[in-house]
Length: 392
Image 1 (tube, one colour):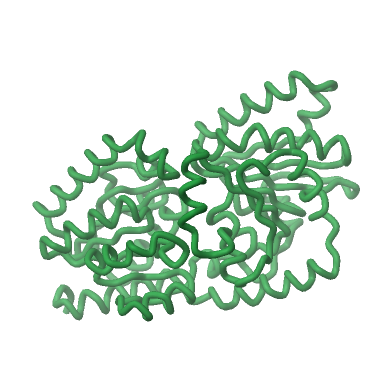
Image 2 (image 1 turned 60 degrees about the horizontal axis):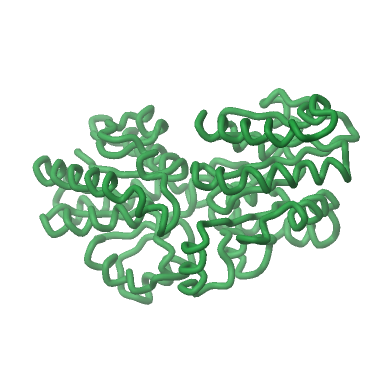
């Protein structure tokens, strides 16, 4: 069995690696190649290009990388047409993958797209393109599957692998031991995730750091713990942090309130009392870890202006979309500044009756998403291959 596969970003790498591992249990000789992240490579996928090549966010930002992305896509399409896989799986990265899928499908290669584009939220004109490009859509969330069914596109709801991996109950003390974080009884811990893409980190670093200093002025007993997906984003953030602290009194005392980690984002969030983060899969993970959170979203001004006019839903964070309600607070664009973020972030540390009601919803959503996603995806893949005489 030969499978072409393209995944972008850390979240796609996680999903793809889970699928690869689960399929290899049943079909140990299966082969995977394409654009792969470190987890996929570790699971056994041959990387023609690294997944970080697709980690570009925003309509305007993509234009700056258009020539390189176009060249990579053209080369991969040529490779797969000349060496046809039994099926091609595009994982997320719809602006890149849908064109690959459409071309391969036209050439007679079966296509599966794993992780629905947000067509239910904006740019619904893409439904026609999806229908022409994709033989089967695998969705992480039930409301997405209902949307595709209503538009007569073949779909399978498989749940989310994060919901399977994360326990329903989290032991905060064990998490703190795993990341070797010592916390005094009077201290509170805030996890901060400024994004997996460099473009996110560059926009959020300064307002986040100013927020930390604002919070420390009000509550000096805070610890901020920050995980980074790679050295590039960590080095940038550290440089910004040192520059801001250089202007603060008692710099050394303040620096001791910050602990930076390479990876370990799940344990870092699990070890916290509250989370400040960039919108994305991290918000879903924070919800599954049952953490109060403040979700931020900041784009290039022109990208935000376009997106705001195309958006068809009232929320952008996954907890709110899944709940169909303003379950967590969302802060966007010019509001992403210390004067707004600091008081809201500090208020998350006071868990009240409202938090208890939210916690119940978090638990309900977690249970709903627990579908054994990796094996569900593999089962959908096997059924597809059998239906198309690619597997006996």
